[in-house]
Image (cartoon, rainbow, N blue to C red):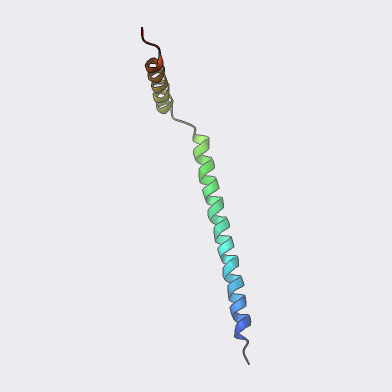
Length: 65
């Protein structure tokens, strides 16, 4: 006599464990990718652009005579 309920329970546990392992692997890969991007820093041309935009904004907000 087969116990189909136990087989389904085992498959469910196996599926859940496999999903957890896959999720952990994905999380690890994403964390590594994010860290590598953060280490690259901001390119100089973008920093220059931000400085120019801030300067233009300051000039616009200066009181006019």
